Length: 389
Image 1 (cartoon, rainbow, N blue to C red):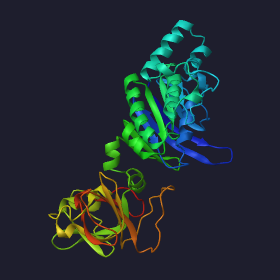
Image 2 (cartoon, rainbow, N blue to C red):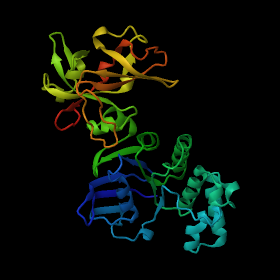
Image 3 (cartoon, rainbow, N blue to C red):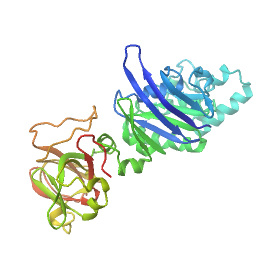
């Protein structure tokens, strides 16, 4: 086990493309840190630089107190779990797991002990004599993890290890990997494009976009206090609703204007944020998470002046919740996520998603009131897209 430090590491390819820029991160001893971002953002490149599979153009990499920037991959004391498992099909599970030990010429008895320990942790004892082709996707992933575990490395690297599994198995394996990592206490750097994986597995989550680190924080902090519009939209499913708007003074207090509708906001929402005090009347980016919107019929006691009028376009009844999709006359703000769906249709009408109680009976085509939790609105600078906190 060892801490890991990335000190302004940069990757520039021979054609001049800069995949990662000045990435600085510190992983504590035994920490599980997840690097998440959209396709092509540089996250796998960062992981490969740590592994030694990509040369670091500038910057320094430390494992423990040792600078390993120019150290060969085999000498970095790092084990990597790949997306495609990388198992040897002609070998049994036992032989696949023990392969790193045989390369090191570890005594046969010690090999058997270490393989047995790994197999018990990963619940693979009954599969030890089988070939990878006879295993399920989840079992193959466990074998790949077993091969990493027996090396007893200082650091685990995991490159989207669940992306080839079906949705149900991914949920199961998320919990298993997180539990195994906690039991072993090995410092782990995990890369994924799936923000649900990131939020449910990591002690901390680092968000990257276009090779630049956007924010690193505990999952709860990242969700509650995103540093900018990109993080706000990328973290959370369904994504945060983001529109151009403004805060106005109405004599008795403050209100947020979104197109042709207004929402009264409590005074402390404005007065409690220093960066908003001088922004009254200025164009801003206003964000509201779907779970902070509710069908007014479910909660009729909510104040009338903290409601939107909406005509339902799509209704998704998911059992534990109901998603209502509707349009509002406000300008949508592009978060910069290349994987996000673009706005469709009339530019003056933007989509909005509300995560409502399953007790909502609103139907497509119906015009209803939507309660807004005005204390939980998010505000961002219109130009820089940085959070106003």
